[in-house]
Length: 520
Image 1 (cartoon, helix red, strand yellow):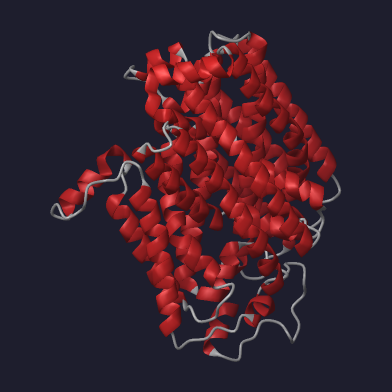
Image 2 (cartoon, helix red, strand yellow; image 1 turned 90 degrees about the vertical axis):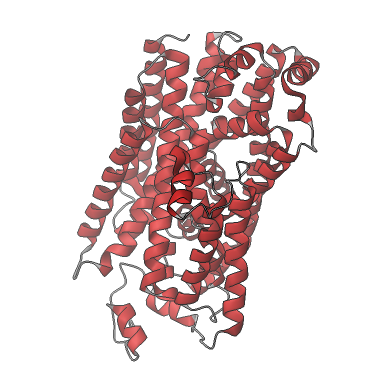
């Protein structure tokens, strides 16, 4: 086991360096709330690509991705790779469209409010905040579990250190600090990940040794026809796509990019990079199962598949290798945590004007930072209780799978009403929930309350995620097809404006009852 003092020293030093970089770079560049949450049109193609890759590559790629590989094998490897690539490809088309119809926007929730009205807006903001909160808590859970396993550091110390330092530079520098640190973190993540994989393969006797170990432990993990693995792999595609469609992270970076062409090329680059990284990361879990130490712990009552990769490292590689992998994990969690803190800041800033009258720029900035602190503290508390990163994600992914398509459909068609979007989302959520294996025995409790009418839970998650996404999609298309309403998409650009733009006589339209309600 690595020395606790050494591990903590590396943690604090790394956090301090990136905090210093973030504060230094953003000093004097954040003069308004617009600078804090959008950094509008400030990022070229290189940085855009780097931040899109780094923002997706949290410590979960060393925890939940290998956990999936360790449990479901090669099909999960393909599923995670394809699942992470498809949303990036979708955003290469969605991003330019968002900039076209909402050129001065900030967040997906303000779009939901203007496009669909109060009820769908409330549902979207609840789902989006819950998803990002779970994502943040899962990241802090993952890094604290990893450091506790390799160095015996108490989980609360790791969570507080990571959350506190990242909060410092994101609270001060906003999105600009996040993007510049993402760029540097990206230059570390890929080399460290490749080096980690190569080292593990060599330690286990090369590719032939790895193969023999996996076959000996569980040959079904290498079987592309393993039905539970296939079902789980397909489920991942629906889960990740739906979740990313409600992720505020991408909306911020769409506006930070220097233009629509930059957005499109950046997301295309991320499509390839993120897909390949997830293929490799998930494969680590399969490789880990072929190691004797991991196999021994698989039968243990307290075994946690989420740290399979770190169990593999323990006792098989030199201490400096373990520290290098932990540095990778730390950089990964920082790249995601700062992204999520900024996303929370953006959401509250975009939505606060609807709650406060005559708010000024200073009030908005203070409120955004204060809310982010509250979220950070809550996420730290949750991270101390959670044990499985993968299961944390899946609960939030179910909500995203139900809401994602109805939400973005309104960017392209005016025929879907707010009521139609909400009903489509709730219909998908109901369909997915009926089969979802909720933790803590909740499925059994719900089944009892409903008189035993619920079907058996699908532990491969295919029916819950595919059902939620496909049912909501079909309902959206049917409702839009037969709707007599027609929303004027031009209203999006008229009613969603920069915070530093003064209102004029040509400001928010109030000539109809609907528009008057929106302008409140």
